Image (cartoon, rainbow, N blue to C red; front, side, top):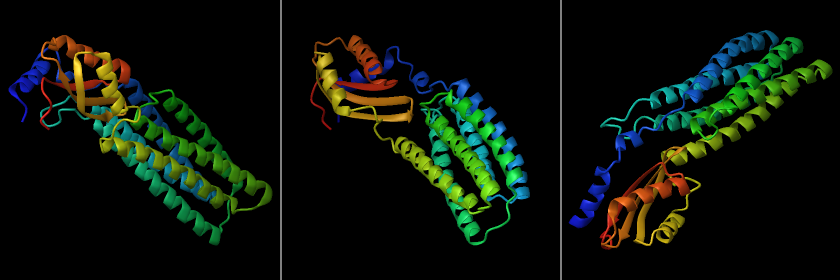
Length: 311
């Protein structure tokens, strides 16, 4: 149990000019939301053309990529909904608001990339053993149209918030589509000039492997955030060392915990033992400002103590 002095100090921190409800509701950029919405519409519209073209030409690369596009349209919709839901303010049941839904959306999008890669690979292996007739000319034109659409979508998203995990998940889906279009163009050209239809499924498998790698990366990063892992750029030992070096009033810093609400919103809690003659409020303000400036910590909860921590 903490002493009454410790409890009073911690309470003092929360009562002076610190709007916790505001800090727990970081602003979600309108720009990212709009970018994802328009790319979602673009992707969904082209997907219909690609399905028709794939069925007409008999190209597995186009059909497989249209399945990828369908998933990507849903994934972009999920990412867009994540931004929309993230605007809801915090309440008593969700004191940090709904921003973590962005990370759930990114994690889900990463998982779908795994399923897409598996489906493409299975279909490609079947096509290798059971080759079909492929009309290379319509396949080529549809694939070129897809490349143009995907380049536009990639540029639109790439110019958005590159640090947002939700945006990164959406960007990876579009990048997978772009690579799928490149593979379809290459397969169409090979079939057109050589008649080697195996190029279609083989290049589809190559795209599947690239998609799989991208999915693993987004799952790893979003999963780390969901497990409340320490942000990659933070070294907790360095926080302790630098706090005691920066502020002579701090005798010790311990029980340091750090995690991310989203990739951009870092939260830190720390217990700080101080001299009894220290002016509390000025020190709290200085610690919060220093953590923000030095470590990009947007929200810090500091518990001040006069004695050694009982826990």
